[in-house]
Figure 1: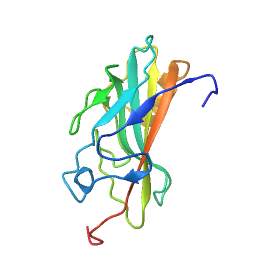
Figure 2: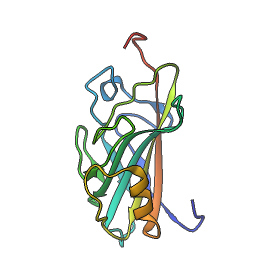
Figure 3: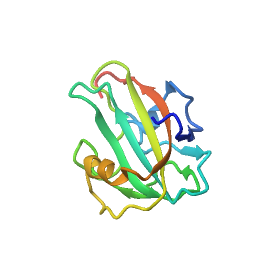
Figure 4: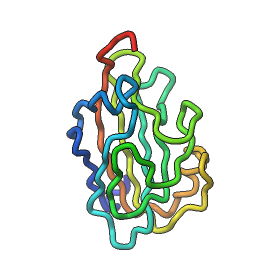
Length: 154
């Protein structure tokens, strides 16, 4: 991250930084997204982008959520899609809940504030998204949660 770039504050009411994501937001629960709050959004921001990445996945980073053109009010409610959703690594559109095959995995919510809205269509790829935000990012922040299956058979 550019040392001069503003930092967004990304939090959740459901877990702390590096804390355990409650099972209701995973494949062992309801499988809905947790609530996310974004603060310190620059006044010139026009939209937000959110990525949810699992860098510990066996085949490389697994994208659980790809979303853009989120309103700059900074609140993402539980079980919602307040922007336009793209393809996750499972090949579906929207949130795909944490479901690590084994062990504890990190789930990193990466949020970007942009100085524009994006012209991408629903179902666009993460690659298309990252190409389209080049030069438009004015702030960035992350929130990392962890999850390990409680029911080893799930």
